[in-house]
Every structure is written in C-alpha cells, then in structure tokens.
Amino acid sequence: MFARTLKLLGITVPLALLLSLSAMANTCSTVAGYNCISGTGNNVHIGGQLGTGSSIGTNLGLITGNTFNVSMVGSNGASDIVIVAIFNGSIGGSLNGKTFTPISSFPLGGALGAYSTTLAALGINQTSNLSFGYVDLGVGVGKGGTITVNVSGLPNATALYGLGINTVNVCTGHGKNKVCTPQVMITDITANSEAGLSKAVVPEPGTLTLLGTGLIGLAGLARRRFAR
Image (cartoon, rainbow, N blue to C red; front, side, top):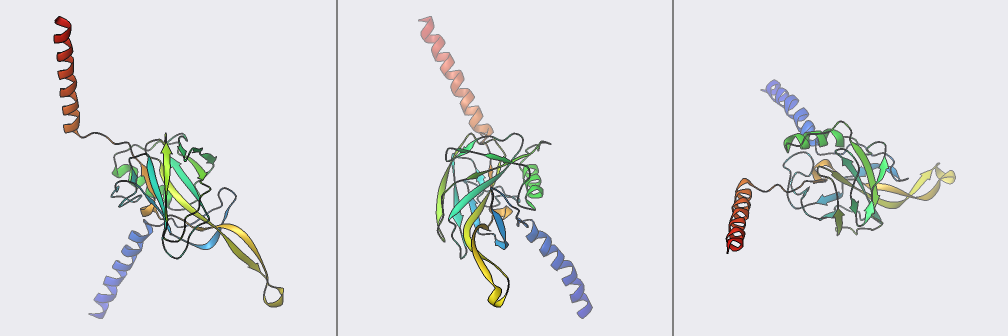
C-alpha cells in the first residue's frame, strides 16, 4: 500500500508541476532599461473581453475590442506599467497613442512556448518571424487597482504582458559596510494565463448568412426603384 502511494505521488507531482509551469512566465530579463528583482511576483493581470481557453489569457485574456485592462493583485501596486508584446510578424499598433519600441528578444521566459500553444489552439498560423516590442505606459496602478488601456491598430494574435515597475532598495555589503541605494526595477510580471491576446472577431456563419441576405434584399430594392 505504501509503495503504491509513493508511485502515485511520483506520477501526480510531476504532472502538477507540468500543469503549473504552463501558467507561469518563469524568468524575467532587463527591458526598457529596467532590471528585474529576484523573485518577481505574477501580480500583473491583463483583462480582455473573452477567454482563450488555452495557455495565454485562459479565462479573460482575449482582446476583441479597442481596450483592455491592467490590474494589480496581491500585495503590490506599481508606480509604472510597461507592456511587452509578441507579434506574429511585424510590429504594429499603439497603446494609449504610444507606438511600440522594438526589442531583440522577449524578456519573459516560458512565454514563447505558451504563445505557440495558444495560437495552435485558436487555429492561427504562427509565422517564422516573430517580433517583440514594448510600450512604457507611464501610468501607475495602485494595490488592487485597475487601469484601462486604449488599443489602436494592434495586429491580430499579438500577445501582451505587463511589467510592474517600482523603486526598491538594493543593498550590498554586511553590517557596518552595508550600503543600500534606491533603484527603479521590475518587481511584478504577468503569468501566461493572465496575459492578453488580440483576436479579430470573426462573424458566425449565421451572422454572415443574415448579412448576405440583407445585402441581396437591398440590391433588389435598388433595382426596382431604378426600373420605376
């Protein structure tokens, strides 16, 4: 019985770890001149209009409108928010009227694998030339707070992650030799499951049929009026 329990745990624990890793953005690298603290929290949430049901934006990350929300959860607020993006091709669009600054690589580890998985789940072909960029919103979010970000011209299948920026004390040395200096750093990031993904709304077949019927009807009415 004990051996069977150990065997079950041996299967269950790795599976649980595998499932949890898909939700995480595991590592954080320097972006926009900001370094990351050790142990960044997954406290920046992107909220759209729908859920993808996949790795990125699982429950409410699908952005189908012209706005999305950035929320801070947990014990932190943020004095500034930086949005980093994965583009399925060329960089484009703007957030709050600010265009994206290109970067050579994506700063959050684990995101690219989640991006590929999500695009496949949504039936979107991934290009071989992904691009990356960021926008420094220059706006803070209080603890438990939310801001709305306006979107313009954002390409389809663009993934959006948030970085929370704060001033922290960085200390070196020990005892009497300890010296602390304030530095502006990335303290909070976005987990894959809480990130956003832009997706153009495709009308359902029934909607397309009604639209086509309406256009045919208008064309017939125009012909009758012209004949008179």
